[in-house]
Length: 211
Image 1 (cartoon, rainbow, N blue to C red):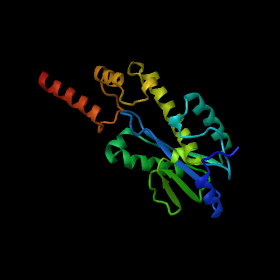
Image 2: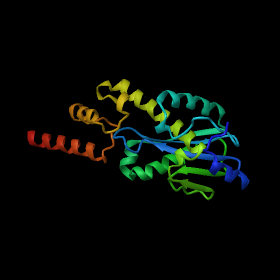
Image 3: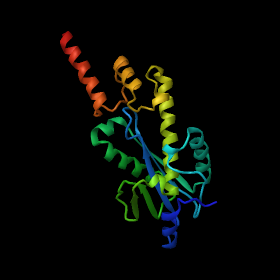
């Protein structure tokens, strides 16, 4: 059954493009961990009922769609940019880099790329504002990226259960900030982000006073 998310894809099919990749990233806002992007090429006219922006889906639905998309996609790729690089080049550029890595990871070369809001340095590409809610292929990429990053947060939670990564996924919730203050900054925190920076400076000041 066709959904209402194929408008952009249909226009491209009519122009002769067949291998259309959608790309999206997840994880701009968290204080910890990488930004993760995915790129997905779906078969021509492919449509998955109920698929939309991953943020609007329950975790159960995302997991279900994740398995279906991986099974049905012509190709999918994942790009990961770590916290250290985010600190060095800023989150906007890191998001773009993650998308480029995801596209490079595809084992089939796309002939057109649709991205969620991010202009990309490819000749045949188009950035769509709110693309993850408007394009089937971008929505598919958002699901792959979100489930992939959440799995990383669950792994981090197993290593450091005191921080509560399983529940907040690294976003700056009140509880997360309290735990960060209490237990300190782990290696994969983004030191350029204000809440982390402030806690680091406070700790530094306290150490200097002690000496």
